[in-house]
Image 1 (cartoon, rainbow, N blue to C red):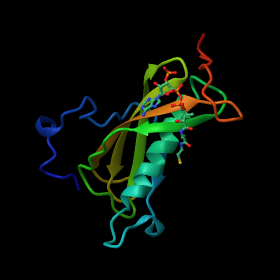
Image 2 (tube, rainbow, N blue to C red):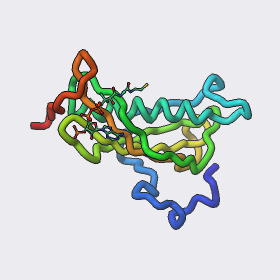
Image 3 (spheres, rainbow, N blue to C red):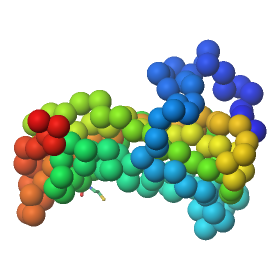
Length: 144
Ligand SMILES: CC(C)(COP(=O)(O)OP(=O)(O)OC[C@H]1O[C@@H](n2cnc3c(N)ncnc32)[C@H](O)[C@@H]1OP(=O)(O)O)[C@@H](O)C(=O)NCCC(=O)NCCS
């Protein structure tokens, strides 16, 4: 069920509408192992998937190793429940010398994919291309 307080007016971002024609970088059903002490999905589970989704997106720009250097402030706007189908949509927002910044938006479809979509959160994640000594190296843009 969607959070009734979560209207387009009070979402301050550009991802206010579920991007149904876009393929998510990650999509998975939340399981009981993903819960916190009160029975909803643990925020850390969502953060880990955001990190993975950002790395997946970063590999469109850089084939080699990337590490996470930064994840901006994250506000959770709606809870996620066991059985929700959660989608992590990504887009590259900036490519620097060695860094790739990825925008990730997170949506939960209630209960096994048949229900309403709830906007959960979004994040800006910066990944850095590194060599085998974990030193920054230039991004090799695969699109060039
Ligand atoms: C990522 C890391 C190699 C960068 O090293 P560094 O000495 O900060 O390197 P630099 O100062 O040259 O910065 C490299 C790039 O990262 C960017 N960067 C560094 N810190 C940043 C931050 N806090 N937020 C956003 N970007 C940042 C820089 O702007 C630079 O981007 P550019 O090359 O596109 O201009 C180093 O900080 C590190 O190893 N961090 C740990 C990464 C990790 O293990 N992550 C998983 C944690 S469990």
